[in-house]
Image (cartoon, rainbow, N blue to C red):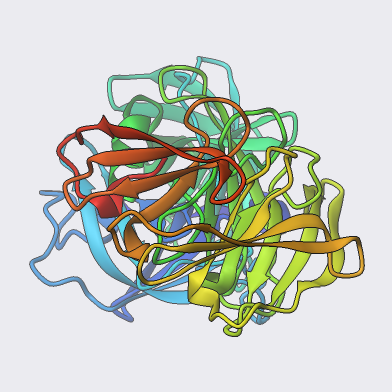
Length: 458
């Protein structure tokens, strides 16, 4: 039975027209024949009800062999507007034990924060919000997202029953797959998705039907499965070369997870200890981009405040910097302008690492033969400039594509590492670099863990 947030003639969904706070809610146009609602759980994945796609959901939730053309509209509370994102669903991954499916978009969306995944079981009497694009009490095909408050009545193994708490509210046709979520201090946490409802008061429902209860599919107990499918988050920087340094966004000393979109927008998850050790805190969209594609974006601490700054490396090696004052909605970014004009090498050869231990990322050029030229960060152009250290490493018999930089021995200076094709790592400890103390050959410090070099991050 399809569901949709709806209301009586006095309300819609039943509730109020939704605001931008629920931008993670999506509308699905499935095969041009019917619609459902969904929720964005990562930049490229939605969660919704499998019954939205099943040929005969009353008999089976089995998905069709071929996905009907499905268009998702996300972050557009008013469908007559142009905000948000529109994309096609190209892949479905069902959860076999319940009415739930993950839907992969053709490409990631940007500027829209996914809803947090809840891990706490819903409790009887708990209030939940439900949002969706389904019918209202008076409209067959509304052009607005609506929402209403519901209360948990019964929690079962894979489902949760809830009843309307907002006066006149109901879940109607078209709300199927829409999110049910709790509000924790202004942050929303997904509890379930709409599966079935009585649809009392919905447009087109028999007037004798007065029941407004609904059944949702739980997601709190499959949070790890969802994360496993959508692979969120993904390590940063976004580059053909794995990252050279930890990306500590909030300056707490722990490396965080960032996802850089094609347009340069950035979504951050703060490290609270990692999965099973405190988890990750969804910080939302921390940068909207600065007119450069994600492939040119890097992160490194330029001003030694402990927080990774947003850098754009141009094709000619020039660098523009935005200093991290907390990110969008949390202090913003200070535009430092062009802090490096380049040094005669293309941007693909430019790396950032702290060579002299002063906590500021230095500008490095890694040649094809693994040799390294360094420019020490004295504040950048117009702020102290760069000191040319010349060639600090002559290479160690490996191409530049295998060279990484990370502080292995805790002296704050980035060491020279070679990551072999099988994931093994050789290390040369930074004692100042060539002509400044040299490098100590530590030999092979890791034999690999069964993964190729392309998957190894230090």
